[in-house]
Image 1 (cartoon, helix red, strand yellow):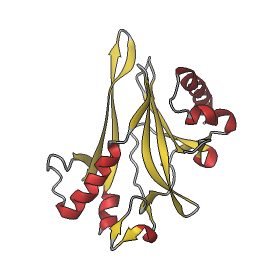
Image 2 (image 1 turned 90 degrees about the vertical axis):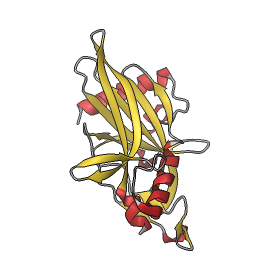
Image 3 (image 1 turned 180 degrees about the vertical axis):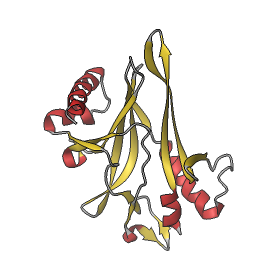
Amino acid sequence: MVLRYAAMFTTVIAVDVQKVQGEHRLQRIGLGIAVADGDNFRIVSARDGSAGLGMIGTQVLQAAEQSLDRVTVALRLATAITIDSPAVVAVGGQHEKVVARHLIWAQPKSGSVSSAVWFIRGGESPEVVDGQGMFLPENFRETRHLHVDVGEFFLGIPGPKAFAMQGLPPGKPFPLAASHAAAACATPLTIDDFKSLAHYLTAAASRQ
């Protein structure tokens, strides 16, 4: 039953693009938890009692919301934002805590929004998991399949690494080899890191 509720929730990242002085900019960015509601999604929160999911569903939702509290902004610019979110991913059948780094940017002229994501493995020498990232389609919606580690349950209660993503969301992959990994994993992310990364991603996207 816990697995059913864990798979029910999805993280939503929404951006508001507005034209300011002739240039499109990211005005607002919102993060939340949603559940499927027909062909759409409904934002829910255990804090305001609007979820109506019962005791177990509310507990799982509370844990998901706590993970949002640990989301940080690595860099914020007028037309782009880099968001770091804690995640658990299955690597070789083992559940591993990583950081999911999302880069979202708007084209100044057209206002179209693009995004990319990759996993960062921490430590003294941070690295990109599997050496690649993923370009995501605009207005992307993912049906996420979770990997379960029964060894992470105690008396039927799931631990922090009981459920894991099975990999990056589907999209168009691009390599993040050692020459670009330093900028991709930089914390804090500097303007120079971002410029280097943006230049590489622009070139990589043009080859898709």
